[in-house]
Structures are given as C-alpha cells and as structure tokens.
Figure 1 (cartoon, one colour):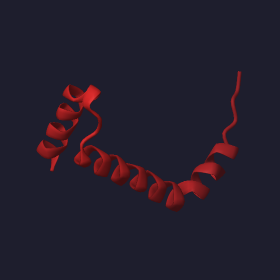
Figure 2 (cartoon, rainbow, N blue to C red):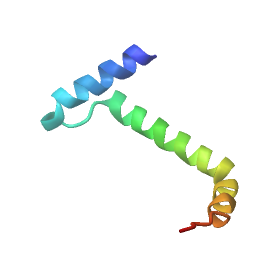
Figure 3 (cartoon, rainbow, N blue to C red):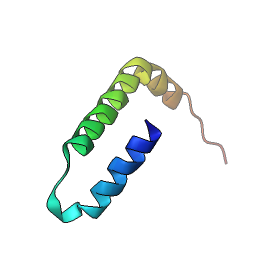
Figure 4 (cartoon, rainbow, N blue to C red):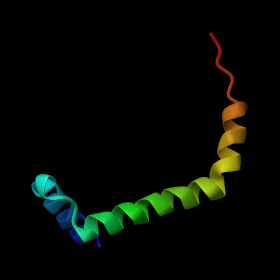
Length: 57
C-alpha cells in the first residue's frame, strides 16, 4: 500500500501538466473521506478541548 501510494504521488508530480490520474483522484477522495470521518467522530471532543484552553502570561 505504501509503495503504491508513493508511486501514485510520484507520477502525479511528474504529470502535473497532464492532469490527474484516476489513482490520484481516488486517493484524494479516500483521504478526504477519512478526514471527514475522523472529524465526525472526534469533532465534539476537539471543540470541547479547544474551549477549555486557557492561555496564561
């Protein structure tokens, strides 16, 4: 998985002018979905923790 990710990102960098490959689009969609899932699960806890932060001098 890590090797395929590295190859997909490397080929995306080389083909920057040629558009995005389908693997790059799928990978981007997967990472965006993963980010939304994590935010959906842990979002309330993160917001609560952020409200409790107190900065001192």
